[in-house]
Structure formats: C-alpha cells, structure tokens
Image 1 (cartoon, rainbow over the protein chains, first blue to last red):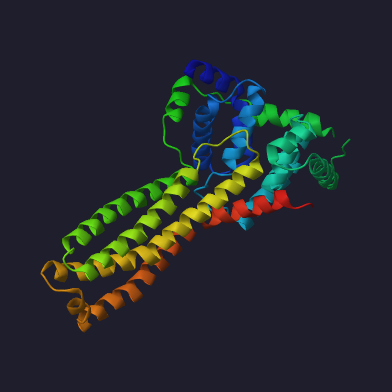
Image 2: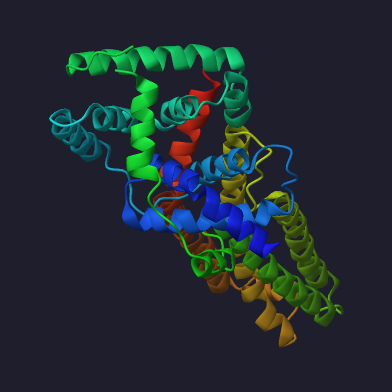
Length: 161
Length: 205
C-alpha cells in the first residue's frame, strides 16, 4: 500500500503545492503544511476506494487540512496587503497571468478556494460538495468573483473575455 | 484575456515544477500530526491521566480516614466530582477526530474543529476552576487527618482555613487567568479564522 500511495502522491503532488501556494505565504508554514497534508492523506488512504479520482480526493484532503492548520506566523493583514499590492504593481509591469495570480491571492481564503476550483474545471455541484455550499450559492459566488477579477484586470489595462 | 488560459500558465509556472522523493514522503507519513486538534487531544489525555492519579489519591484518603465518617465522606465527595470530570472529559476526548476525513466538506470539518477546540479549552478551564481548589482543600485537610485529628478540629483551625481560602481565591483565578491568556495567544487567531471562514461559507452573500 505504501508503494501505491507514494506513486499516486508523486503523480499528483502539484495539487498539494497549488493549495499550499495559494493559501500560505510563510516558507516554514508551507513546509510543515506539506508534511501534514501527506500525513493526513496517508491516514485516510485506506478509506480511498477509487469512487472519485485520486486527484479530487487529494484536493479535498489538502483543502480540509489547510483550513484547519495553525500557522506559526500571525497573519499581519495590513503588511500582507501592502506586500501583495506591491507585488501586483510589479506584476502589472509584466505578464497578465502574474497579475491574475496576485489578484487571486488577494481574495479571502474562501473566495480563493472557489475560484481556483472553478478554474480547475470542477463543476459547481462538485465545488458545492467540497466546500459545503449549495450549488446555487457556488454559481452566484463564482459569477461575482469572475466579474470582480475581470474588472480589476481591466483597471490594470488587461482586457478579458 | 482568457482567464482559463492565464490559469493554465499560472499552473505551469507556479505549481507544477516541484517533485518530492520517496524518502521524504515516507518520513512525512511517520511523523506526528501538527494539527491543533491533535495537540489539544494530547493535552486532554494528560489531564485524564492526572485525574486518574487524583482519583486514586482521594480513594486512598477516603479509606485511610474511614474511622471518621465525615472526613471519609469529604474525600468521597472529591472523588465523585473528579469522576464526573473524568467521564465528561473522556467523552470529549473520544469525539475529537485527529484525522481529516475527505468525505466531509470544508464547512463541516471547520465546524467540527472549532467546536472541539472550544470544548477542549472549556474543559481545561473547568479543571482549573473546580479541580484545583479541591486539590488545595484535600492538601490542607489530609496531613492533619492522617495525624489523628478529626474533621471538626481541622476545620476549626482558622489560620489554616485562611491560608486555604487565599490559595483558592487568589492562586486559582491567577493560574486560570494566565492559562486563558496563554491559550488565547496560542489558539485565538486560528479560532477567529475558523469562525470567520465558517461565517463566510454560511452567509448567503
């Protein structure tokens, strides 16, 4: 079982890194969280019966662990926003995807989760199951979030469709 | 700008270029969890062990003072209070899951964790406010009772009563205040974040 687990993790670890990068900025916290997600996924692995894809299953473990993990660093919100705005300003001098990334990072954790699941091609019903929202609620929130991002991108000189 | 295409660029640039070797994965799955729930559950376990120790002490004291019915009943009362505390804390201990269940939604997991954290810390406060004063009283009564004094004699020692009351009235609140401050520092931010995220998921806007 360990061999199978290692192979599946190595094939899908991009999902873990994505969730961590989106939600945690501190390097030490990222390292600890990565190990915690591996541990939590291992603990639940015997219950993974292949009903869903492993990538979806791992995404759920990673998200649930991120939202219950205690960060060592207290989030200094004002400083964090300043740094993100500076990065966004820097990014605006470069490419559109970098600007989009910084805008997504500026969203609150729940909105960040919703939009990243949407961009990863999860259906609203699946996003609702993962988050605990209703499918209608997901639909409304994602519609608003996309409009919000498009508006901000336009303000920075990037048109969108 | 096509947001989906830009997201694909973000994925390639930021999320896909790391790989973890087998050794690191195997090491990670053998480590202890760092989740707060795991930490609080361990603390509850230590309290349960201490309560068992004090249950034994109180039952020995009740047996030792069995010739004095009043004293024996006193220690039996302490035993019963601690036993009730043990049962309550043990029930909470068994409910706390340290394993993240991927079948549960994010909302359910966060609600469970916040509830368990609040209850675990509430039981710690209970142990502090009720358990510690009882220990003071037991510590005050037992030595003289063991020397052969009877309960009314011991309870008539004004100086001893004053010392016991001051210990219970000043030391207990002070210790609990310090404990609550430390818990707020250790867990306050995380509990606020959990509450905020739960509220966000449950709101309709």
